[in-house]
Image 1 (cartoon, one colour):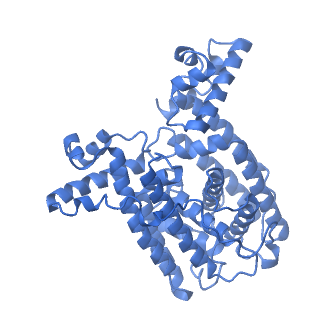
Image 2: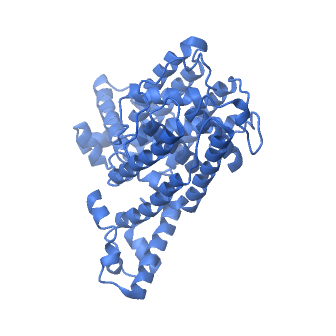
Length: 461
């Protein structure tokens, strides 16, 4: 079923022959059961039969109200998305002032409250959002609508030197992903208050880098914060618990290695475009132009292929994080940072499927999850090191800052795909660089010596 069909039929229950109070109660029971099962099992693992059994009705009876679990999900997406859009209207005037900062801080708290209220849907929303997913066009509509509304507020507030819609996309990526981390126990032992304070500081400096230091106050513990090991770390997982998957091909002939590389490249593209759950071995071999028999000569199943890709990704990621910690200071840093970001965006888009399963922690394969935990620890420690070198005249929780930087880099490259801000790696790297320089590197003039490529434009109303 197309996304257009889903949207047109989202109100199917309202026009269904099943009417009256009993029908309304059953319909609500279906929605409630679906929401509960999505929370417990996830969208992909929940079947229509599971929902029907939870309500105590037959599959046929459920189909009188909803034609599929996707249609159910669309209705829930409309409700949660509309709540998030309503939050935009509650945003007071912004600016490089104490009042502007307080309005932003309060508004981010409201955003967190809405996320908490609809957390099941927002978490599952993240899990169904891949470029080739059936619901992606609907998500793109929401992203563009949000950016438009938020940009209107930013234009009115005089956001400094950034395209307002691009700035809105940055905020959406960082704030939503950070709230996702809060609900998946990925916040490094930090309190909600520490995360919110740091988020407000970063967002304020991204939008208004001229904000005086005395304006930026913290409502919780100030200063460098507590450097804690993230709960993502388990034992010595950093080395890659699945090490050895690639080594099994090392002694094989160049022809065989070429075939394996062909399958890995095809797998990377298919997993990046679609979720692991809906990808089949047939999808991979079709993309590779090979047969199923060839696939099974080298890989046990699609999970084996994914774990092998994850091992490759983890190894290359260690090199990237080492390069990040080695970025030069002073006048050379802007160009070096942008070059690193171009490489990172290309790397992220290649291994987007791996990043997605690491973030979602699905499938629940212990080797795959251990590699994800190790990769996150490696990235966060590198960010701690770099951000810890930055002198700041205001309170800043370092582990929270590193978490927000991870949210930005892990989410924005995927989020912009298919939207009006979908662009090449160089342009996206420019937006990321400006965001990092302003929000995370304290806006040092030696760091942000380059102006943004695009001038802020007036938003059409």
